[in-house]
Image (tube, rainbow over all chains, first blue to last red; front, side, top):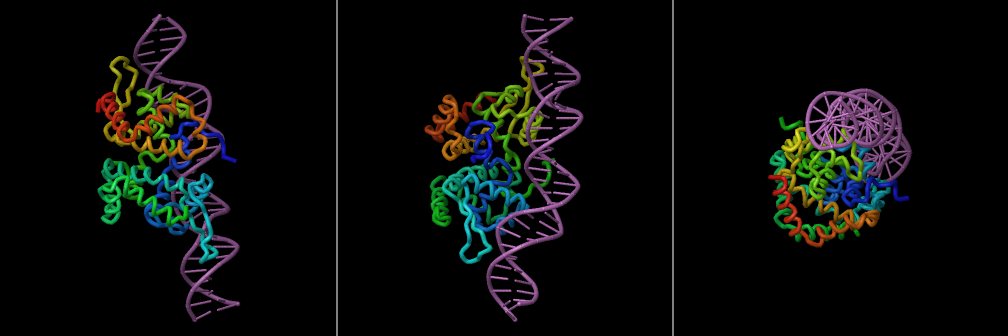
Length: 143
Length: 143
DNA sequence: GCAACCAGTTGCATAACGCAACCACTCAGC
DNA sequence: GCTGAGTGGTTGCGTTATGCAACTGGTTGC
């Protein structure tokens, strides 16, 4: 069942009903740019997401086909979260949100040097570099 | 005072602390693409935002410098909300979110014909058309 | 004067969030 | 085997945000 009725059929609204909250895109950021794949890794973000919220968001993303969940062959207890093509397609949005924040929010000046470097490369490289990152994700996440 | 401490200085997080909820970007969408400028107009969206939430989001956006609020010279009771340059800079994000939704969320097929047309023009036109829309907003909103 | 319109505000029930503790299970080392 | 660290979560509970409806005080057009 495709969950319940959306508030409207505006594609912007439909998108926001999937990732329109303050945590979902941070989880995706970590999957896209921090190489995280496991629950415990995702729990370690700077923003200190709590485990119940993380569990909820991961389940929701799996339900919407943005992620898949599979077993780690090396450890029966481990789960691996992978981006689908639908999830990888969100990368440009995540990048642009980062670009806007770094350009327009003054606190972004306090970002540490290492993250700043990653950011600068993504912005200066433009869409070509995004596409490279997306291609790499397809390989890593077995899309 | 610049409000309280952010969860982190990641620019993505800083952005989401401003518009990372399911209503804010819908309000901006209506300012950008539906020509709405007054409280009552913004209240009329398909998603049926309630007036207390709308008031809260508008105040928050003004506080963050994304919008300005001014008096309508023709009507002492009317307030006009205008996008700042910082707000206009969010247009590419709004457009990309719409593009993702229309491409990846199946319900988006149910969109009405008129909205579909606006969407198609924005997508086929690419960044050049976005820039035109942004330029038009600068004129209309007196940035 | 009066109805319609304006931008919100208020009160209250429900849902979501945030925190901390806890759980069952697995794996590596001894 | 036993133990201790690591795995992906779950549970309880207090606080905050949301959603709904009614309401307010002022303005405008007729």
